[in-house]
Length: 318
Image (tube, rainbow, N blue to C red):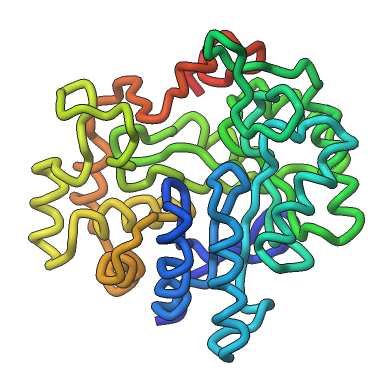
């Protein structure tokens, strides 16, 4: 079955399911990305922050060189890291990504976070007391730098990630080129209903990171405070009903809501399984059950170590 696409606000089309590379060790990223392309993934989600872009780029190049795909067959997302928020540094940050991914342009260029860090070679700059070091650079300057790169043809579309609605409203007030995508945490335990409606109102497509629970988050413990969606009995029962895996059910739930998903795995069988969610459709009762999980404020990726940052986004409920 051909991969369904969504059309971004500027007319660029984006596969609704992609291959995520967060938390993938560099030594696993090469094989994982190759497996994904061989399995039919044409959307690759990368980021400088992940520390594996070189290996992801090597895998992409290998599959282009062997004739499996052409560059134009792929939709590649990259993200500007927090240490490159100054307008004059955006070019440097993007070029590092382009060099590692071995491409002349990105299909989608995101501002990874609204939280700027101190500029320099360290991805996570800290002081002697292990406190993060921040920059006071305004987000407006960062966005203007991204617009500069769009004008040069280095990106086909611009977007954001992990912004709250007030930060998006502010950006829309000064943006010459509007964001067409927002990447945020979305899963049945954290449905992001308000944010989805807000983004739809402004022509912004939502992409779900942590879409199947991101169980390898280092701070997760097996307690009720950290429920795991893939072990939920409701999800299990729906999976049994359709002869599918819990992951396929959760991915399908987001897809039927028009949300782009970027599941991550390094296991070939799971990489293949995750993309096999287009041959069934959850019915109305399934969607009702998945939409009926208690609407508590459960965010699995709160990034509490940034609570004191002046642009920390999650003080707002959406």
